[in-house]
Length: 252
Image (cartoon, rainbow, N blue to C red; front, side):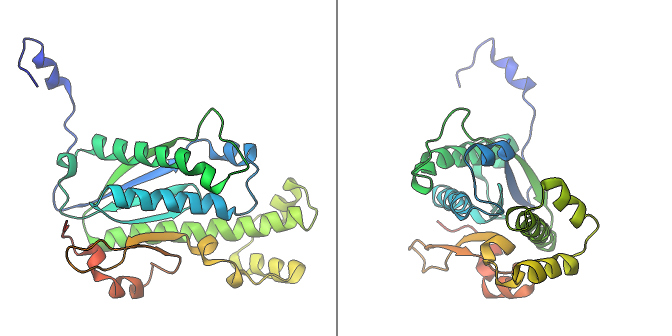
C-alpha cells in the first residue's frame, strides 16, 4: 500500500490476530433457515439432499483451503478446524471468518441445483453467519466437537419423534409438543417404537451423528481423498485411528 498523508486511518483498524498455540475453529450457521426449509419444502425431520449439500460445500472448503484439517456439520451448521500451526491471513479472525463464510455461501448457492434440480433457488439467497473460537488444548477442541455431536443427537431424536407424531400420528404441532414436554430419551424411543415401529438406532447415522469431513491419510506429495464419516467422534476410537488430523503440522 502506497504511503500517503491518508495512511494514518489504518491505525483505526482493530487488531484481531488469534493467539499462537491455540487451535482455531470457525463455526457457521444458516441464517433464517427455518423459513428456507419451509419455502423449499425440505423433507421432515431430515432432508438427505440438504444435508449432503452442506457436506459437499464443506468438502469444497477443505479442497480450497488446505489449512483446514477437519470439519464437522449437522443440520444447518458446520465447524471448521484449522491446523494448529496455521498462519493463514496472519491468523486474523476477521479474514478467516469472512473467507470461510463467503466461500461456503457461494458453494451452497452454486451447488444447490446439483442436489435440488427441481427447485430453482430464488432471492433472498441462503446466507450464513460465522464466528471464530480459539481452543487452547486438543482436549478442549474434542469436547467442543463432542458438544456439537451430542446436540445433533438430542435435536434429531426430538425432531424424529415430533414429526412422526405430526405426519404419521396425525397430531397437530401443539399436540405433539405437549406430548413430548418433559420427556427423556427413553420415553421418546418408546413412543417411536410403540406407535410407529421405529428403532431409532436404525435411523441413518448421518441424521443421528452428523458428518465429519477430513482428508484420508496420504503419501507425501499426493492429495488425500475426502472422507465423509458419520460415526462417533466423542470417544477415543476415531482420534486414535486418525492421529494425523490433529498432528498440528500442516504439510503442503
